Image (tube, each protein chain N blue to C red):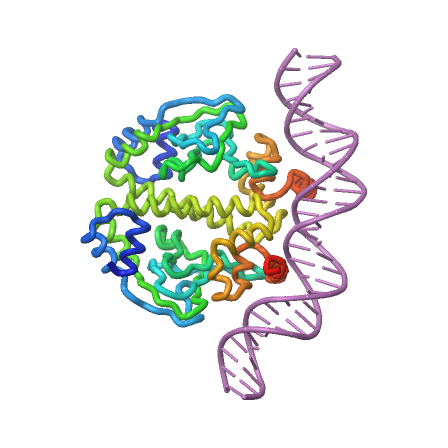
Length: 190
Length: 190
DNA sequence: CTAATTTCTTGATATTTATCAAGAGCTTTT
DNA sequence: AAAAGCTCTTGATAAATATCAAGAAATTAG
């Protein structure tokens, strides 16, 4: 089983191995150089990628700053879901923080999976429902935790990220300034 | 077309009118008195309800306070999605803030819709994807806006809520204390 | 390898938001 | 209508976080 098959299987559960292969064969290898854009705000997002290696930053600009919504990495999918699914203009830009290897499926093939695999929509629904739940938890963390608590929680669960991407982006996605992040970090390293 | 049919149609898009009726007929009227619980943290959530009237508060308790995740009202669905779909213990409690009329489908019937209506999972996927997008925006608001900006934005879009439920719960779901909420409110009323 | 650039840290200070405490307004109950 | 509970407001103060500015450290480019 390829790594892609392994991950898709783990996210979408029991799919027959022939179906699994049908799906993964629609994903084509591609790569990004550090700094390359996967997507720019306002464009339509016409693909979904699986990250084989590297880090991508999902962000949007406000009048006075760039806000990092998320950093995606090995083993995760990346896309602007609302743009992919509803053909709306992308709200986010997505940029490679490092060189990255992706497996990418274009929109037409993505849409075709539903015709190809009868249970696909059900599995996809379950997958998106899980993503929804993760976002609910993330909102809850902003309603109930201080910056320091969010830092500690995130650090415990994503240690590896901290020496691989600029910390300012992690600060932003946790909802604090780089300075606050740095001070909290110092405290937690003592 | 009943109100329930109207809403389901508007959320789930084109469903044949016979299918639409098949679905809505699975929802049974029920009601809650003010203060009644729709769901308690830790239990399994075995139903999905459409709110015909009234207000329900979705919240969870931390060691030192209750945090309101959301307030749901007329025209919206209410459930703990992760518990309903994955049979996990509910993370949230859901309590009626006022008397409320619901149309409720139990889990068995909810699961059965998928067998009954071929395109159901696809429509449901789209529905959950839209909910996902709303949560993404909500997270973004916590990363990019001050308490005052969140207040103003929410107020503009949900004026009617402000004289129908205790403001402390709105404060909590916007991620601020009742005192801060009250001060911002005073400012914005001048 | 050095220079240039970017990122991170630190200190001083300002602003935002939370906490605590008390009282005023509402609702509900009796 | 009075009493009892909530809920909301207000003030004083404390704590958390942001801003601004400068320099240190790390990374990238030449």
